[in-house]
Image (cartoon, rainbow over all chains, first blue to last red; front, top):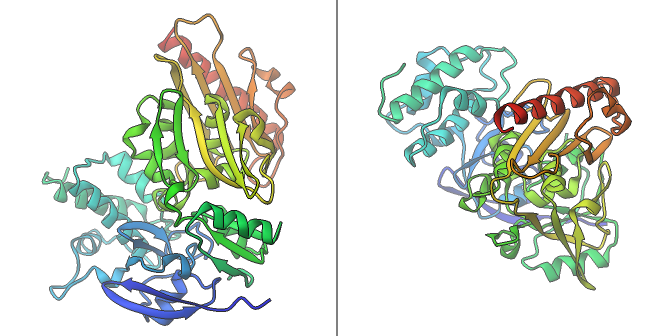
Length: 166
Length: 269
């Protein structure tokens, strides 16, 4: 049986990416191999670790568990789409200040889930420290360096909510 | 790893899906959010010849709260329902939905997909059996309603035929004042797949005992008598796996049920 390829267009960081892909081709491969955006890392490749998390139409998704054809027509934001000409984003800077990396493999995923959380803060949400931890449980850090990651996330939320860092 | 090769279509109507399902009975798999399906595809546990993507069908993405219950289209994401204003009055679902996976998986994972996958430990199946309700299955020969209590036949097996699409779920509206407790137990807390899920529904002023539903590996969601303690083993038949043995699951179920009943006695009566 011939399965053929599908012509798709995905807006990645505001730039249209046109590609002809086999149905089984995952979004993570489209980003890394076709768009050349290697900031999205694939850890487990089966949805457990969260390293490959990106924003699809503004909300977080495992790019390894999403077929590229499913993302046809979607707006995708990767870690490359966050930093502007002025340098690192607020989330990236906070992670840097807190030393929230060891090997750095999970960092892109961490950045994306905090970005999503901050969008909800902008919309009025005020997540508790427990809720911030629950949110970060979407990303596994195999170096187990969670302490600084949690601290950085709480600092981001407090700053965005207009409060002093506890 | 990548899945095996398959063909793909993304119909925009239920009728098109039904036509495709009847064309290739048993060979096509329905794809909604893919949060249960994709891990099986990349591990090559499943090797479908065709995927039919139902996530773009608008009629499957409606949520409506009516007098008799909460009607949820099969392709409504878990995150959408979790944040829906229609959830008022469904405290059990309000507690259970945030326990499913993580935000990135709930952003994609659907209500219908989780129920049709029929993982016996899954939060939504236990909620559906506890609340009661019905499911609507649609095929080329029309639609039929399946009572919630008839839906789960065995772990990972439902009453759906291979030519049918689950189009809608109705969670029955609990009586006013109903107390709802939900708990799922996992090895590592939030984000970890549950070893088992337990729901308790009770009316503080009714004479009837609380309704308890338990589901876990090997044991599809089922009602258990309220007086279970260690005797829960008589009613529940779990499987063991690398995450927990069958006997451990039975003890966990007995402890969790006892904890919820104690909480009910202390907080309510």
